[in-house]
Amino acid sequence: MKIFILGSLLFAAAGAMQASIIETISFDLSHLHAGSTLSGTFDLSDSPQAGDTASVSLSFSDPTDYSSTPLTATLTIENGTPSGYTVDFSELTFTNLGGTSSPIDSKDVDLTRSVFAHCASFPCTASGQFADRSPSVFTASYSISPVPEPGYFLLVPVLLSAIVFGRRLVRRPSGIRVS
Image: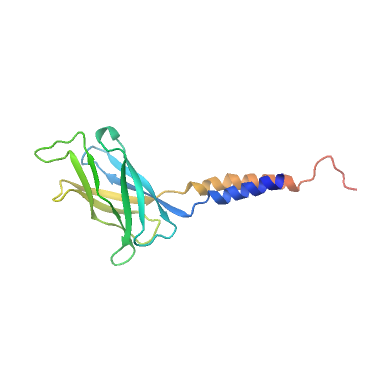
């Protein structure tokens, strides 16, 4: 039974490790509301290539100021110029509840990428630029950055438990004498 528990713990520790890259994307919406952001996390394969896509569910830091919560976007990895990769995102449309329709429409927001975030490899930290409509009502930045994988932090206590149980398995019971 003890060997089964030891094996189960080691198997669970190996399963806790992830074989993907987790990144976060964040859009600075301070032009609409001070300190406002739109952000979410997405997963990439452990060796992303041009053409790979990832879905990301985005949420507002202050959801009462906007409609369409949460938003879903598709991120696309593309070939960078002259090398590396770029990160593009699908068009994002939402309503700024505190915006006005005239003289300049700041109520209906339609974000598109205007400058790519460029990465030499993944995981990476990079920034790009987006614009609200064309011609743009406002421009601001978006950034991507890696998220620490929780699997590695969970691995340590599980392995320590396996070592403790393993030592107990090897230890002789206290009531048995060796002649």
